[in-house]
Amino acid sequence: MVCLGNICRSPLAEGILQSKLDNTKFIVDSAGTSNYHIGNKPDPRSIAIAKQNGIDITNQRARQFTKQDFIAFDIIYAMDNANYNDIIALADNDAQQSKVKLILNESFPNQNLDVPDPYYGGDKGFEKVFALLNDASLKISQRLSPIT
Ligand code: 4NP
Image (tube, rainbow, N blue to C red; front, side, top):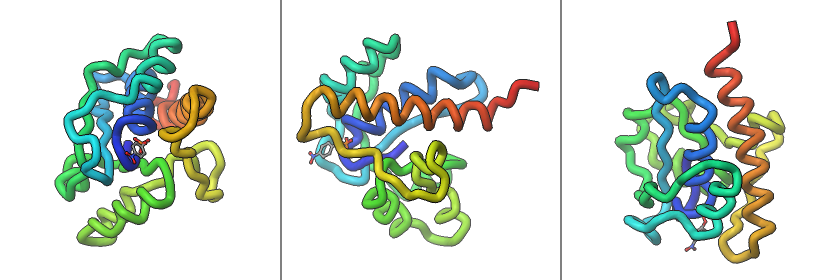
């Protein structure tokens, strides 16, 4: 799960998807394309909206996306088109590029929509982001863990 700062959107995406998957089978992590907030906790507004929905993201610390992530992970979800382009620019080959997806294409196929950056807005923005990421994560979890 990758956004710009790794303090607002991607920490929520990490916590939400983790809450929907068997964590003995899947590793969900997050990172930022920027180095702005390395080592910081998630934004208090992200911590609050997660807590309201029964998810604790307080142990997360921001880190920057690295090329190593292309090797460590099978799927890389970008929160918006700018993050997508920044990640793609770091890929060494087509196989790595093909791991990168826009997360909202899970809910709105082929529309290439952005999870809006809530950083400069108010609490409503974080509620919207939570709802968008919850829907997308539900789709992801249903595909990865089909009920047999
Ligand atoms: P995020 O939000 O990418 O969802 O973590 C942002 C956090 C910080 C900044 C921008 C977006 N910033 O410019 O510091």
